[in-house]
Amino acid sequence: MRRMDGLSAFLFHEERSGAVMHTLKISILDTSNIPGGWNYERFRDSVARRLHLLPMFRWKALKVPFGLHHPVWVDDPDFDLDYHLRRIACPAPGDRKAFCELVSEVYAWPLDMTKPLWLCWVVEGLENNEVALVTLVHHAYADGSGAARLLEKFYLTGSQTPEPEGYENWQPERTPGKLELLVRALIDLPKTWYTTFSKVRQGLANVREMKKTYAESGRELPPTAGDAFSSGRDSPFNIMVGRGRTFVFETFPLDDIKAISKGAGVTINDLFVAATAGAYRKFMLSRGFNPDAGPLVTAIPVSKRPPLEEDDMIGNMTSSDYLAMPVHLADPVERLRAASHAGNVMKDHIKASEGADISTILEIIPPFLIRLLDWMVEYKDGKFGVWGNAAISNVPGPRQPLYLGAMRLNNWISMGMVANGLGLNTTVWSYAGKFNLCILADKKLLPDGWELLAYFREAFAEYEHLQEPPAAAGDAAAL
Image (cartoon, rainbow, N blue to C red; front, side, top):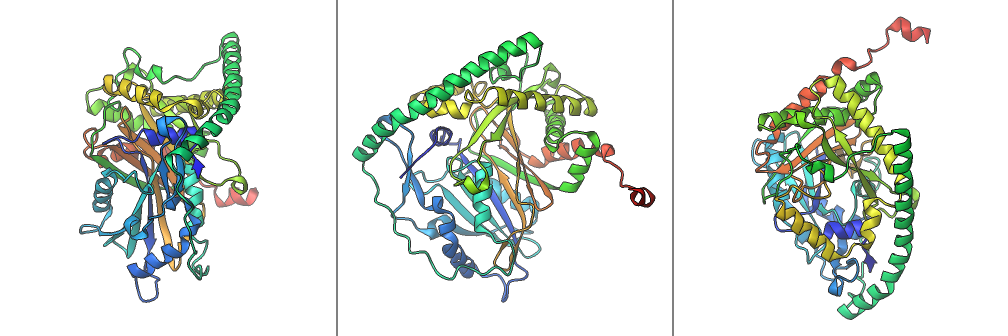
């Protein structure tokens, strides 16, 4: 039995009809080098041999009676791999557009909350001898960085790495009853309060000191979630989501993105924020919204995971802060400068407010307060909540290509979720020289995801002139 952390519990309790809380992990595999060709049964056998590398995939969640403490993960004694591993064909012609339409439909279905919270759809019929693994994983299991590390364990670093020889002799632990869950909660709860209250108290003291210092020096504070819904700011993205979803992705060469950011003297994340601001600005204008009213307030996740050798890769070790996304600036260079400035303001604030961040506070938030928050979001018709106006994230994935037996992992894409009050999520997931930009949205908000991706392509193109020119041969020789 393993108790969820506060943020994982929050994401678990946020599961609603329509507002599903699972994330999306897509592996695109090259099957052309498999001796004898692609065979689903052999693939399923390989997954069975590797399942011990992902122990959470056999866990289901149990709530504590009366909501006294966070839910716990326990072994599912009825675990059935064939329930979680499913086979499907992509409609012809099997290109990216057809694939994304399929993923949009698959993603929209809720997971069965009485079973381990994941499904993997094995998608055949793709172009170029490719097969895709479209995996839905509930966000309560792990954050983006943790999921990246977990899934890296599942794959291999080379095609010649031998497969595991046998199957793990797995024996599920006994499932605790309601009385045991209640007793364990009564034992754990005082420990949680004791360790968390001291962190929150110190964090609040840090925040008070920070605000005092900032006021004396005239330094700028980042926006708050409340600023996202202040008078005069109107965002198309803060809605109550329906059941439909739109998912699309585009792959850019990572070296090109690095060259632009280096030429401009900013980070890749600054460039991503500026391009997102440009794309969102065009989207707002196309829908009759006024982006010139001011910047949008964007929730940015910040990983707090320990070094790899100390990380069990389970749970959500992520904080978040808010960033002023400069959709109000029409000039792309001004947007880039503003995005870089906003990023620095947010980074300084994160350091100064350690302990008072949302991930720490959620350790002591009971479920009834989460339900109260949900009621307020619904009462305000999505114009309220902790997500700000929109959510974006940038997660670095593996730098070197991975393999599953003879299959090379051609691409690896990851996406978060949308929720009531958050109708649009944009995530970058880099992998082996690829900069994968992914968009997930409520279908009512964004029926055609390629429209917004076109705005992103235009936004990045506005910065291409900032790339550092390659050194001439004579210059190189002189270095």
